[in-house]
Length: 315
Image 1: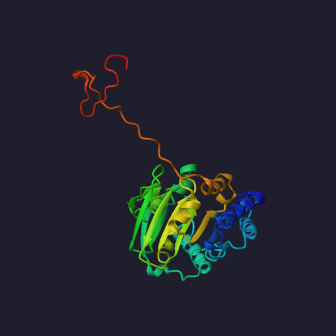
Image 2: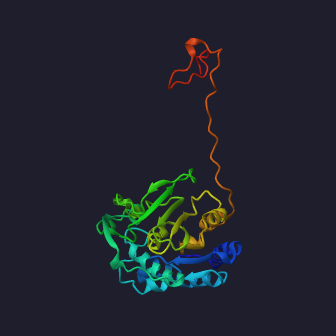
């Protein structure tokens, strides 16, 4: 990890910008996720990285005081002897995300649901991105597994594809078909512009989760506590976030990003872009010109055939 305090300040100012724009009517949370570099890097390589905790603390110190900082770091650091990160992939496990969820629950004012009350499933083997990029046979010989927990069995979900932000398709929160190198996609089916989840808990709490891929394993934990959950990937979202928040009656926002993303201009710019961009406008639909009575009988359209100009052989 490298990072810079100027980049961290930019990220903090960007999150604070949402609070300034929305005022006190919307609660905003910021959760920064440490990566496995922070806890598992062998001692002989420690000089190659900067510690992540000082950067996380600095970003939190620069936030608007109204933005609630979530201390996921302490929860994760207290459980590093457990399976919190994959060995062959750069993501955290569902267990790592669970401890971050318990930290968020404390900040957001609800009691986290115990893992013992959730149905557990497992996908194995899993060989992820670290092997894909290095082809290191030692990783191949030591595969991971992906556990996922059914946090709430009763819900409805719509998934919105890029280029179709207004028409969702029926979806599930967990892609139980996921396997192999794509096993982490069991969470939300992977990265999509928007996944909208409605639960049976009619408590008026509506949250937008703005995330990159680390947030996929986290978002399902919110289902026992919120009436509506809108999971937004800032890299692909095509609507104006401010208008979307207003239209949906969203009263809480959680920004959840790993510490690398919070120090990357690409991700920060995307957070800025979705706040200001206009809503997506579909491209116009082009149709063939209508037939006229002057069309020769022999060249009239037949079903499934479009004749552009029958008199020009090179058309």
